[in-house]
Image (cartoon, rainbow, N blue to C red; front, side, top):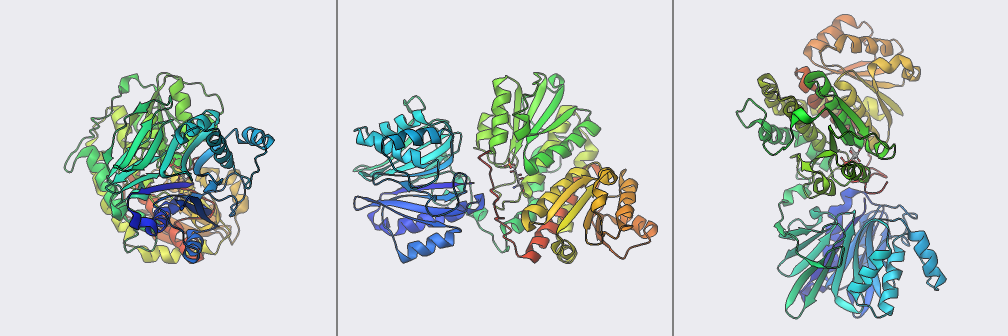
Length: 614
Ligand code: AGP
């Protein structure tokens, strides 16, 4: 969702360069999803700002036509919540004295706004953020120092937020603070940085310091150089750990790919290989998870809690855990779990799945479970994320940064960790499974080598208004994931169904225009899925079946009416590990359908990479 960047430079030569650097940093945050953007600097005893609705190119054009200067500046990409995505509501918000960028939501803003209005303050925007500007301004007028003005303001705010603040009368000072929304401070020789996402600082900040909940960071330029002082939520000075940045510049470039999503789809063989090796070693035959401190004997059941694609990874795990490992498993949508007053079980393991580690509903569900002293484990892809930091234990996925809004490699990496966890809970050192796992990078590469098939077959989807995805068993969650990918990327209405549910309603939708994607590896569910496919073919649906060579032979023998049937033949894979191979196939179908339609693949409309508001 929104993105924050702040830069404080010690070099006066950087006056003109700093706004450019802010814009470059904001472009690295574009993937998070946004609909307006802005920057502000302090220069010549004034706060100067530029803001634009729409994509960053509009802001860049504005800055080009009307440049601004400064050695201190803040920038923001806004995903509209309170108020339309227009210039007036774009950040930074400012009074003559103070400029603020803000991620998250000030929940009590309307009460604060009323009391400020009663004092004669006028508001220019519809945002919740503007109350922060006026509260700080008010405290400064009452002669509080900038730090005290911010600390006093924080006492009045409710909600989850990250804020970075500039002051007209303190042109060498920037203050940053967070509560429930991430912020990282970075440094390198002549510059200090603050950002909501370390990816914005790749190649710039060599050392990073993640702020703790409630921390206030004071970034300052003095005669002796740049300094950072941190205060905790009780306003006491604190030290936090600084670590070298681990992120490489390659993570934020598309290399030779036309989209980040395509690059990330193609990274899956390597991600799978790294993830699998971390479980079983290069030549290993048993699962090894030395860092997990869980006693499988004390875990009566597992609750998996997540949103979106991560939730679907949880559904795959439910099949694995129950069918193969006999571990009772419930999968819960985080936004529902947290509000239905769940009966919590002290003998259960609560497992939180999140690529970003910042999804607000998943984070809130984690807090709820922790308040009740139940065991928590998180599977996340962002090591320093809020979910990683708040969970009792973390089992990191090794997907590397995922920039495309639609999750691809993070999903398949989650699946590897879930399989590893299932085996760990079962206490099973299944050599056969280890061998199957080691085949996956090659099998996925084979799928990726067949791009022309997906380009061609996806035309059937690209011209449709609606589509259905059908699967049984382990392919049912992949049908849901395939439909979500198509929806997100191409804006085609798509639904995934358990193939057995077809006759209980969805079959009424079938006509000659309806594409139906059938996921049918030749496994124990194949014959039944094939019957369901026959039922939709009999009603002239435009069917795309994903199967393997044995499945294809059965289709040739059993299906007489093939005039509306397209077949994609995937490598033969064990039933157990088939979700990996079929996931990559549905990712490619969605990617090429969107490419045919010309939609914004890496940043689909209205979507955000990490959903930090409810
Ligand atoms: C996936 O393509 C989506 N972008 C979305 O469903 C996502 O998986 C969901 O918002 C959960 O995100 P998380 O894994 O970062 O918690």
